[in-house]
Length: 330
Image (cartoon, rainbow, N blue to C red; front, side):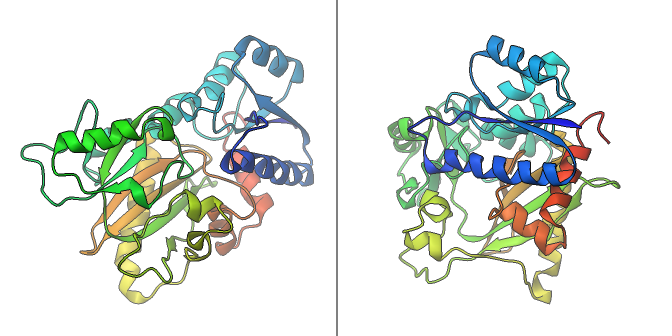
């Protein structure tokens, strides 16, 4: 089978998180070649007429979609599947609508709330879910609406505003660093979990849950997985936020609850191939859905790959399952 790996175009000034897609391309290409496929990598750009021509000339059977940004903007992530839909080319991962709905975090939160799935309260420049008197003493974390990979997240992102207008001022002040659109989410002090979901012959399979530990974090250091924790190899946070997969009996019911809601998110958003759902669990044991990632990182050192390995799957098995779940390829 002829496969095109479509990926974000990487410029000379690309950040380290953007450059990571090239590691994904290399790993996926190696796996596809080992599976016996013919493979070509193709960067995706904003010139849709040119892209359509290049994709037609490639004459592939399926596209392996690794596009995370377009023109350096996460808000355009759905342009790649939209073009592929227009051209009638099968592709891996979530469809256009699912990609848009899950990638816009405010839209995703509203869908979760409408379906009675817990997600932390939020405030944005147009409104939000916090009604009535502003809760004094509350802490909020200011986040990008569109950008993923913890772009713009740091300890200073957690704020304690005195009122709603002060919080909106914090949002406005961070717009440039957060891709032009942002919101503030109630900060949940507690544990952080990632649940990866992979397509299988019998439907989606939840891979072993992972918890991000905050090793050596005293009371003076906020427990957040920010940009430094993910991407800055020289940072304290990078070396003190390992993931773990081993849990005691006391976590059994919690993990089952997280697995159930991860599958609900898969069905609710119409996900396909693979996905990851991120949670915070409050100190009272209540789980809250933070984000739904319809195309999580597939680099060899990623959390998704680690969860698959924990489940006894080789990297090639994962890539085979993802491509097998593309429309018309099962």
